[in-house]
Amino acid sequence: MHVIHQRYVAYSEAHYAGNLVDGAYGLALFGDAGTHLAIVTDGHEGLFAGYSSVEFLAPVRGGDVIEVEARLAAKGTRSRTIDFELRVIARSVDGTGAAEILAEPIVATRARGTGVVPANREGSAA
Image (cartoon, rainbow, N blue to C red; front, side):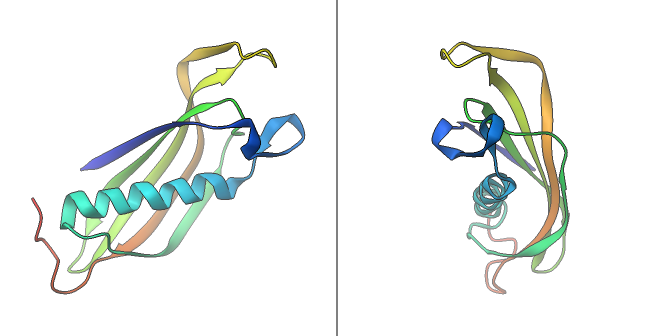
């Protein structure tokens, strides 16, 4: 089971030289995708307990188009282990607004975390 979110990264999200976006931007999107996954799997938003690992592998820049995937890795009684991946699928070419779809997505961030659903909700969704 997995969900994928796609979005354009506005230049206003860039805080560093080279139009770099901070890593927290991707982690916030992981939270959104994790919530979506919890709704699909358990019929409830659940709560995110924390990350066991986070890897920042490549930059995310203003002008990028990204996709964030949340994949159910393991399901306990109430806990859900979730693998996350943020990929850059299109990138700005220059400052003019020109952009290109990348032949191969760039994996920018990977993480693993744990979500928890209330005791009365486990397994209540399809």
